Amino acid sequence: MTEVDDLWSRIPLDGERAFGRWAGRVERPVRLYLRPWAARVDVECIVQEALLRMWLRANDDAAEPLTGENASLRFCCGVAWNLARNESRKRARETVTDPQEMPEVSVGPEEPSAPGLRQAIVECVQALGEKLRSALLARLEDRGMSGDHELAESLRMKKNTFLQNIVRARKQVAACLDGKGVAFEEMLR
Image (cartoon, rainbow, N blue to C red; front, side):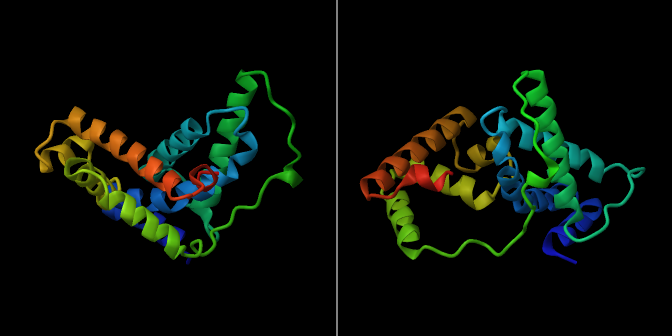
């Protein structure tokens, strides 16, 4: 049983937390799988819709169990691919994709560590003002387990102030990394 399969099997028992861990593990492979559609559809929207449908399926007792290695990831990629194809049809910009050309779904090891990049990020985060740094670190350390309102309250901020601090912190970190010569745009591809 793969890590993805193990995380998927825990969802009926652990609910939202287990789904959050599963979604965190499969989101990047699903997003990469949708690369051929990126010029024609809103990939972020497609990924979120696919994850929502997987959440509904995970809580549907009548749904057939998913079998095989990385079954939940493969199923989610299939859902996302179909959503992207349907969205492209709606926009009347679809080009026929040969099924043989569809990318393989792979869950490989994590990308190798880049200690220089890590150090640059740490330095840029440390350079932030106290409020911006605390908001950004709270969001990062929480890993999406709590809502913005809860995180804001834990920092004694209003939700809107918290969200504005996150945006400002991200912009300042991006500018700092750019100043250090980090090809920030390349990392996002």
